[in-house]
Length: 384
Image (tube, rainbow, N blue to C red; front, side, top):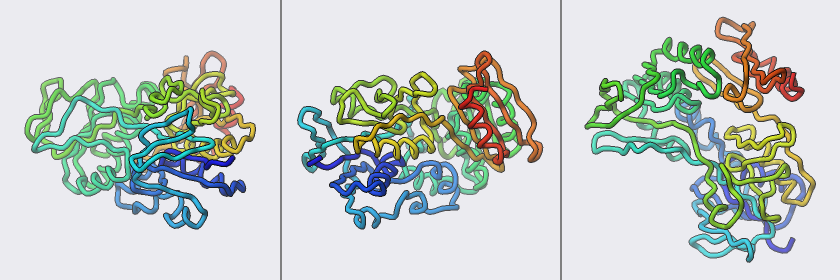
């Protein structure tokens, strides 16, 4: 390969691909375009340790900034790629054109937005980047009246972190329970009870109608005096570059089992990749830390021309108050026929949940039962 390998992205997928290439012996040119001003970093601390003041920005970096120069990686931070030109094997930025031999698109996902704009008195914020987390960290303090819109993973984690900082938190969720699509009604209710026990004013089957001054008007007619709105209603794949270049996309960039796109010299991995999973026999797009790490490492070998078939089971974790959750499998409650919940051995809030589709085990989750992680993952892989 005479031209460099080029990587687009500044998250864990891009970072792990970069490190794996060097650790696997690739000593050719390597160019990484990170749109943000930071070296590649992980995002889970943004809603937890960093937002809560228990960690600093540098703690989220995959490698210290100097590592890239020490390993001859041309890391270009604050340099978003504007376009990809497949016929020329070139990516273009505001600074010029960069040829590539093989290209990895690891652009991740962007927050879904609401038609809810900030006012002169009230800010509507989203949490996705380190810079946005830094801003929220300055705003969410003891006594802040925070309205969280969305009862998914990000919304629930931010609510828990904010309560730990002493903020007054109201969370509104249009569904009957938080995390309903992911976990189903019984587990959603259990987590709702935990948040209410910790002082969150959690309102389900409710949405925000409008903002007036420093007030939020809900669709049930009630009004809230607040200082800040945080919207957490999920994320959409950041696949615009690929789409514009003519690469096949559908809810993310379509890749095969080896993480190759519709163009033979272009690969995609992480949150942006809609992956033909060889174990699950269906396409999956996973927006979680472990998938970003593992696909980043796997795609490095694909970029080197090795035969790759990525079949790792999707998994994710979440921390809320003193609860640690770990989930294995796909697609969760929405794609299962039944769920069985058994009590755990680590206190009243510990449990293990098993989701089945017919006779096949499709997912499992534990709360505060960390010594069972390996068992749960293996049983879901076996389907029983």
